[in-house]
Image 1: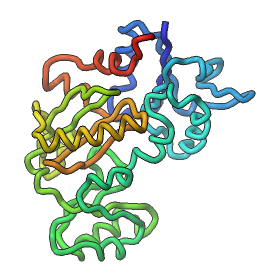
Image 2: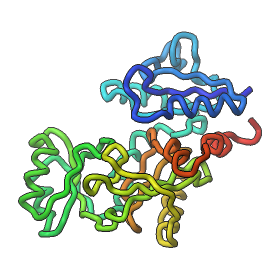
Image 3: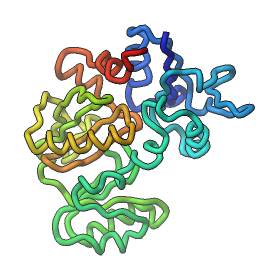
Image 4: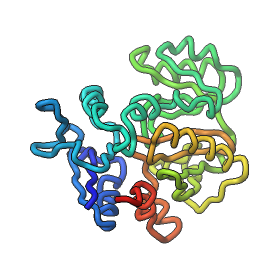
Length: 283
């Protein structure tokens, strides 16, 4: 019987139900499933454990769901880097370097990032811009501004006056028609849905965005295919790709939500498709 270990935030409020939905899907497919909290990872005698007596190397697959606590992130990543990375659904180098807006900026609207609000604001013209945190979820802290002075004020707030990084990104009018989210598992695009804006330009469902069925147009399919290829080259097994028109808005590979929304929109579960895409036939 193949074994899979999920490392998730089991003691804090989760961003979605992946920590319950995905283990249940693997159990239903006949896998031996173990779930441990991120902070249960430790090293002893040269071996990496996830809770007393649970040796991480003994699992066929290890799925790190989310980044866990910032205070312990670097130590955990260094320990998990000791594992054969082919066993991880999302390799450690990807969690560290590619779950970030910087890594995908070549597909995004014009983007600037840093600590200095004045330096970033100097990049703005009189058009519309979006100021956002470099790491965040649910659309929190994302504001739309017009012109350099408004951008400077928003960036001063977003950077905490130089204590944290923030992004200045050119506004994409196509967002007003909605943002597509495509979930990818291994070599398969599991499904796509549209998130329509809610009370403002943000399409996040937590900001009253509304999900609907979606079909990608040829330009969107071509962009998704290029991003999918990069994900596969990096060995990333599960990700969500958000597009507005033919512009990339985000790639979420730490713990992307959307399986529940796909089920809501299309009236069927997509969970088994994730297991099939990530489980080698020999297992």
